[in-house]
Length: 276
Image (cartoon, rainbow, N blue to C red; front, side, top):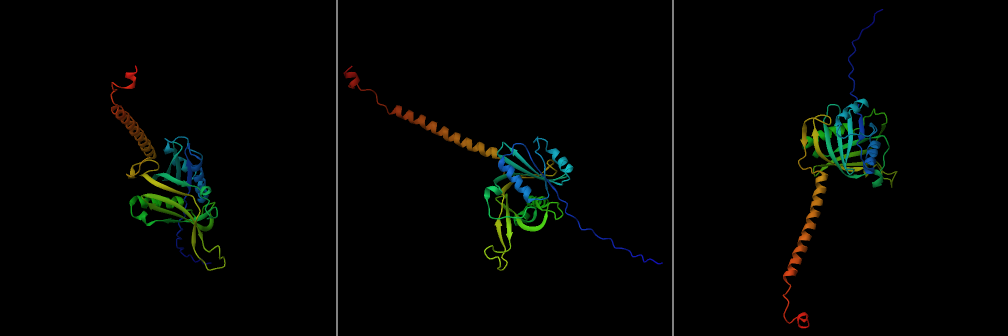
């Protein structure tokens, strides 16, 4: 019995998107920061949430935590003074990592937008063309694509695409928005298809501070020269108020001196001297 032996051509396997994201925070976050984390966790089904990190000075433990949780990306929310929020977006274990300041936080419950999307659905990522104009923008776009792009094989992901995540650059800040994709007009359900976008939330603004070569350490690849810390801003406001107080006290002292100079000497025919 002759068996035909055919040389089978090697089948090329399609590369799989195996991105998983570890999300955790530091101690000292307030309710608004916690709600923002819950909103992002609901938007990204491939996120694994971990307990809070006790120490802010041992960020080198984060790559080990990501490795223990079988994650190759990390979103770390670092709270300072219970009012300043910083976001670390890192590729673990080799980097790079981006440190950003989070401002203008508005959560889903706070906005009460009319948009809605299926929990666990995959979203389309939309980046503005300004990301391709700078080197730090290209690097940030690549890191955000790995973190916010939901893989189709994610365990909690559903095979639907019904919302879009937009990243825009205005004034060297990254603006995040989330919109629902509506294919038909709700007022005309039987009419022709009409594509429109309705905002869902959350929304926030990211100010890049530094980009490091490694995961939470390493050489500085990019540093934002225009960034001013929120502590310095508050200090400047307090100093301005102190200057106003000093100017007011100085004006009061000058006014009292002028009043003393305007006083006339007592006359010899004054009532107090004539009828003494």
